[in-house]
Image (cartoon, rainbow, N blue to C red; front, side, top):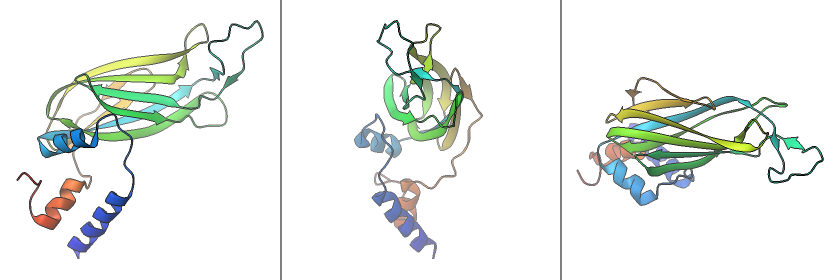
Length: 182
């Protein structure tokens, strides 16, 4: 029974498109085939302001401000781009909020995470700007490392056991081996 459930899950995972990432599928497969942990980047930005429609315009007329169409999220680990995604502002009026997350594998060892977040902040002159935040931690094998971004800073939580079913888990259930290399 358990094998049938895992086979159905594998079919579902293989037919659903994956999240867009900066890392290629080949790089992701390589990371998964070697000692790795998981980074779960949670975006919990609850103070997104209105942004100007045309940030380049210097008209004397008042600029129109709107809800940001998207917040760009780019994450580098040890200078390697592993995530390139968007978060979307929700709510009826400012301040809007973006509450979402992304999960991606990272090689075990010291990780210097650099996050670039753009499109959902304005500077003191009313121009759209970006926020950069950095964190350093150790990616531990088979653990999930939750990093929360509140719109201005990164907050590192204690790692927890990885209890999410992955393609590796499905492969192991079907073949009895953890990865094709083992």
